[in-house]
Length: 77
Image 1 (cartoon, rainbow, N blue to C red):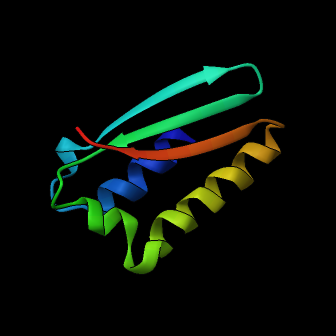
Image 2 (cartoon, rainbow, N blue to C red):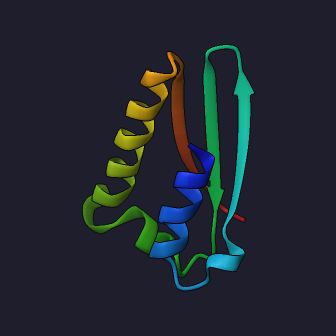
């Protein structure tokens, strides 16, 4: 899941080397915290939040296959 997330987000942003993805795991749950340049955040969020919503949907579908839950949070660097 993390590799997929890194690939997609790095493809969206202008400065992929500055994207930081931290993963927090607990039993039955995984959370991803994504930090990027402030100028790249609108690219990750998308118009009206459509891009980040789609990423969360794909992440949740992948997590369901593993019988866990997943979340994606965007944070300030």
